[in-house]
Image 1 (cartoon, rainbow, N blue to C red):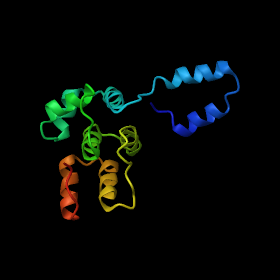
Image 2: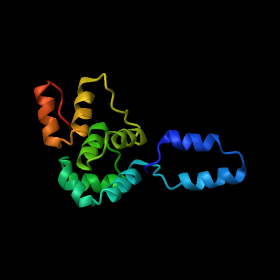
Image 3: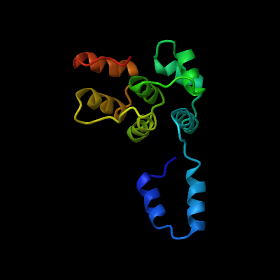
Image 4: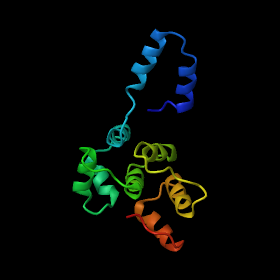
Length: 143
């Protein structure tokens, strides 16, 4: 999961033969294609369980909600994705990718609220600490 898109694009554009293309396609098939697979890959990478995620997430009814996300029956909104990202201790690029995969709009540095989220992620703040920041800065808390 660590290959940067730019590196993959460079490899793809330098691919000249059908055999090289087939090898490239086989390689990219290992990347998660949907949100639940991406979260599972992040959990695996960070040695976390779904139970760990539930404890850290602070989403109301997180026990059922997280399982519904992980079985594909629930599509989380943007705030839930951000809560999951913080609970998983994602890096900013990992969080942006989760938002992209879920088609929830990446964090935008010109947005006051998104700037606070970016700050929280980069400084490893908890969800509680981020909500405190929101409150101090007149922004709506994570749902």
